[in-house]
Length: 507
Image 1 (spheres, one colour):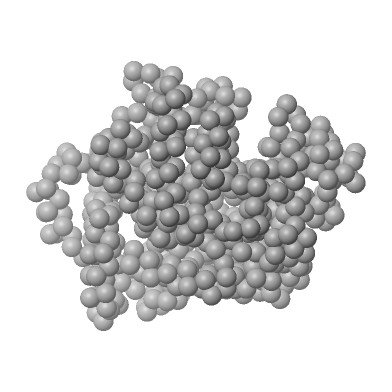
Image 2: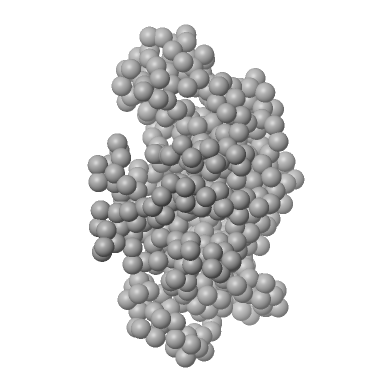
């Protein structure tokens, strides 16, 4: 699948943020249909979500990935599974509280969905289509059996990190693994069943999207979690003796130490990039377009280890970095539509390479400036994605109200839609919101994506980087998807976005 042709507009909304009258307090695969209808009314063609990959138990972050493949069972629609919604009285009381909560209450959602899925699997064991599950396991055997086994051993080891397991399990001794497979066959089958169910439900979402003329954009994290099935199975490819991060910059004097493994691209190349190609093919099959996170990491990685605690680049020389990035993005974009996340400190050759390969990078309007001078969105490169913000930024309204006066003034001088607000104050109004959305839709970028919260002038953000707490990854839309076409606020939002989208030549 290639990138959409012409000028296209879309919205960004994490799946966990969906709200429906029948969910379990978190968005699920059964909630897309009404949203697609709203998007049609709003003249939107692209829906961007955050990663849907499996995550660590109890961890709500979609970037705490424990596999480069598959789906997070947390997103399974329970209504489609026989027996799943046979809630006890206590569960139903907790369910109603979770549904009504303004944010995702993970302390309620996790146990509710875990118990419901276990019930549904018990029902499946008695009268389910076991042959279909067996076929799925064979078709996906290159990753699924390893992941299912990893998940089961992790449970048996009380979720200790895999390098803390007994050595025969940590080092994947065949006899030790065979013993687990023999003694815990049902648990392994359960993990495979979860992925089979999630895969089948996602295929229905893909069919719904196609029927409504919608494109689905996924988010592909650069690296996989340290405590993941992939790092366990391929320690020579995902190296844990060093830690991935970024060097010191204007935002962090000491840089950032993410504590994540790093890719040994030399080892991958010796194996013909088999693992990376499998990952790219799986992502391309799941989405029409995908956002490739931390694009610069495919050019160079910043590693901290015992020898270089302050960090170093791999590879160390710029010509090698440029050649490596070009090779990787040619591989990643084979038969697929890609948007490269090129935010933060970027060397010129990164954007030069992306331009040469005709891969869109990001233009976050509030950051698209040099020496305090903003770029006019109407002069952005056509091959780019214009947006008012990302999942890691404060909302548009929050930024405007807290920005230094010079930033607001610089925007009003540069963005044609904001000229009439000069000199600006920190106040917020529907007219200012409309002008900001219009500036994005009028950008010369072929792609424009508006975060859901920005469209409604909200101040609740999705994530605050560098922090941990219930404020992260818990944002929920205010209305149920079933009421989007009848609720005054969301009807007005669709009408406004449709008008600005059409005016920007993106209809």
